Length: 393
Image (cartoon, rainbow, N blue to C red; front, side, top):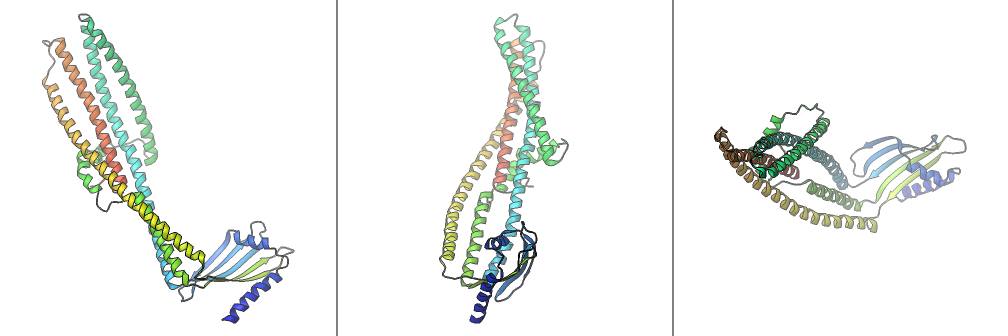
């Protein structure tokens, strides 16, 4: 064993003498170039982990090449952890892709629902404007007999102007959002609003709330911290297993220079590792300390996640109760407006009360639409936060 070791060292020293026109800077450059070609063969063995053959070309002098044959050594335990680590990284990559897809769904659905509610809002504003215009006509008729009504008619006209500006803004925003959604979904503004309504109806949301918040629900932040902890654990186990490794690698290299003024240089390299090296112990200690810190962060993330989901859930349930109360109130008001028929015996005061009720009804419908939108936004946010399927069947 000693004879082999001395022979390798001797050949390595001789290679320096043979490369008279090959500078140390040239030697360094051969290690930093991107590989031109790479061939690797791996196999199980008590000693050798893998054998790799690579060719590197100097980017400044294309004729300068370096070819090496390298054998890496690692304990069987370290190789086992490395194999598990590679599998975990593939699984983690897939998980990150799923989280990114879920985030994209969340953003698209928010835009999708905003279009639906903007469309509803613009239609409801039209009804409110028409009610105010009817009131304006009535006030115009009675203002001659009752000059005190001049203030009311001015206020009504101003309200109509403000509502028309709001309606035009809503319509402009609606068209902008439609174009944005069309780009995201590669469609041509053919949005099926009935389909949207089926997904975001308050009854559907109420039924699905409990399914979105399960005991094993986790957030994207929690998964990211868990992923880092698992990654560090694999690295720690591999480093720990490699503590027993003495020979890191054995390498045979050929620096082949066909350009004039250069010669071939043969290089033999061997890498040693010392289990008691401070550098390796420091690396293990760093990984251990980082995992302790990350576990504390994970604990805080769990608490934050629990509080956040509970708050959103409570807020959404309260909003759903308010929604039902609003609906009941509007149904009663609608019935009252249906019973009250306008006839010639009605006084101006009675007609004004009927029109005020129509305006109240239209305003409350708009408020109900806004409340519904808040419920849907919370529902989508809760779905995104818990990484659950948004459209639970």
